[in-house]
Structure formats: C-alpha cells, structure tokens
Image (cartoon, rainbow, N blue to C red; front, side):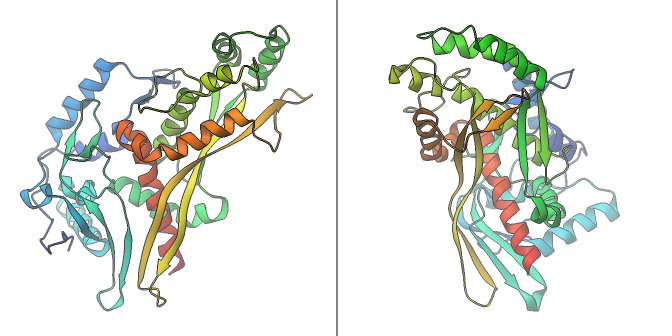
Length: 357
C-alpha cells in the first residue's frame, strides 16, 4: 500500500485518459526543449503555456489528504509495484498520485521492513499544481515533485551507474574549437568579455550532447541535459539570474579589471551529500546534505584542436561555482529544472543504496 504520513491509502481513482505518463516522460517541466532539428534551445513562452494547459487537462487534482504538507510522507515500493501490476493487468492508466510519488519533493529517509518485504521512502510532501511554465510543483513551496518515471529509471540503471556513474556532457566539436582558436588570435586586450563570449558562442557552433549511466531517451536524461544547459547559460550571462546576488561569470571577469581571461571554464553539477546516517543494522538510512554542488576547472585548446583540462580553476570561475552552490536551494524554486536534477540525484542515491542491500 502507498500511504501518507497519517497512514491513509494513496491509491485513488485512475486517470480517465492514458496520455498522462507519456506527457510526463516527454514534456514534464522543460524550460529547455529539443527543437525540430534536435538542437537544444530555449522554449518560447507560448509553447510553455500550451504545455501547462495540456498538463491541466490530463492531470487530476490531488486528493484532499495529499493537499496538506507532511514532513514524513511515505511511499511504499511494494505498494508501487502492486499498483503498477494492477494497472497493467487491468489495462488502466496510472493514477496521478502514483506517477507523482504522492507529491514527495525530497527523499530524506529510506526504511527497510524485511518482515513485510518492503522498502519505504520518506520525506517532505504536499499537494501539487502546474505552474505558469508547465512544471509540476508543490502548491506551497513551488519546488518540483519527484516522478515515478525517474525512480524506475534510477532503479533499472543502478547497476550500470555503479560501473561508470551517471553523467551528461555538452562539448564543442573539433571544427568548432578550430574556429574558436582562429577567432581567439584576433581578440585584443581590454575587449568587452560580453562581446567576446557572444563571438565564442557563434564560433563554437552546435555542440555534442553525451549522456551516460541512464538511457538517453528518458526524462531522467533530459533533466541532466537541461540543467547543465541552463547552468551554462546563467554562467555566460545569456539568461538573467533568477535569484538575487548571483552575478554571471562574465560580470565577475569585468569586475576583476583583468580583461579577457579564460572564457572556456568547465562547470558541472555533482552530488553533494554528507555521509549517510544509518541505524547500524541497515534497516534505517538518512540522506543528509544539500545534494548538489557546482564544480569548475579551466580548459585550453591543445595542439590537436581539442579541449584539454588544466587541473586548475581561475578565481572568477571558482567564485561563480561557489555562488551557484550557495544559491542552489533558492534556484530549485526559481528554476525548477535544478530541483528536478536534485530529485534525480536523490533517486540515484536511493537506487545505489537498494542495490547494496
């Protein structure tokens, strides 16, 4: 049984339309989308509103007992399996509260009940809504909810992820780097970093997206790509900062009065948890810490025309990464894609923990 913190059954009526899970997988919460040619681009506002309207049509309102916030909302994996088996056998669509994991927004505890052959995920949860940009978020916090689709992907991919990790990389082509190197030779001291960055972007051209550890056709993979893309756009000042006190990397360079420094810093988002707390018997676990941090390293163009790591980070790039980490909790609400990424990281940690049982 999937239950709330008060012990109430969460298996409500099923959806009348079976497109919900498909929409959830393909379109959920994307502020960044793939255009018709497969290139990553920022979605237009009108497109996002259509997405929100579509979500509203196919989504049921949360049952009354799920509307209230609960610090200890519980989701039983055994109950999920039973509900999904029932949906398959009866050829019925999955209930909204199952697809949205009862409105969970973070996983804080993992409890094991051997006598019941069950594992229960526990954390903060509340009712949900669709925001103006089409994201499924908490109706009070505005933070994205965890998705059944991402949980399934994390569990299925746990063994593969244990071998090589889960990752996403957006990289320029050798041709793009060659054009960049040619342009860089023309840059003069004192050039406006914003102008140079824009020219860098045009010189690099379309880049290559690589995803590993999870299937690249999944919503989980789309979250990895969209979060990485959004982070880089914020860093290079292509998008306005969504929270106060977060200047772009280019603004930090300009303030340093050192002219054009390294405009090819590498930033990436990584897991950032404190050591797990356990009861010593392996039956109770607590996930602790923020969950995500931003790391950086400068890169340069080698003789072969490819990017090479320097093993160092410039002060400006490091300061921007540190600010991104410090502001991450705020960003999860202002830009839900960052909250979705943290949700996926929570689920990946839980899947790795279950694999180790």
